[in-house]
Image (cartoon, rainbow, N blue to C red; front, side, top):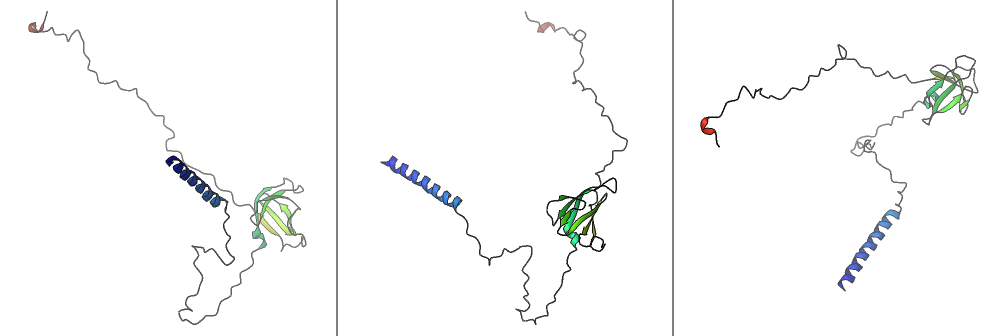
Length: 190
């Protein structure tokens, strides 16, 4: 009867463990409400505590940020410049941080902007509406090339290491014939 009770407890423990982990793995977490906002630990709350402490309210200063230039949306990452001015070139342009795409001269890049010209390290983009207006055109330039890693050789060039043969262990030189001394008369045994 004891073995049946122990077996029942072990199988009950196994079944409870399966139910626990099954519910844990299959349950979907509840979504947060719209009123919950994650707080950035690097940026403290921008609350004005001085009014709560009795200071007079100050007039708020409204700052108007300048609109970014349209050219800041584009980044030139590569060009295939033509050898002859009459030939067409290609430009590899990234728009709004998206992966770069290849554009042929005359192709629409974004909306009414067209790729007008490609040179060795630049690409000219202009509006299709005012193609002759230089005020709407802008030039994208490749980032500067990074310099190659340089170093210096040691003074005097390379030296070839000199290897000496290993030294023999210190063994005293001994001539077995000349250093022979006959045993004393009392030391001989028969």
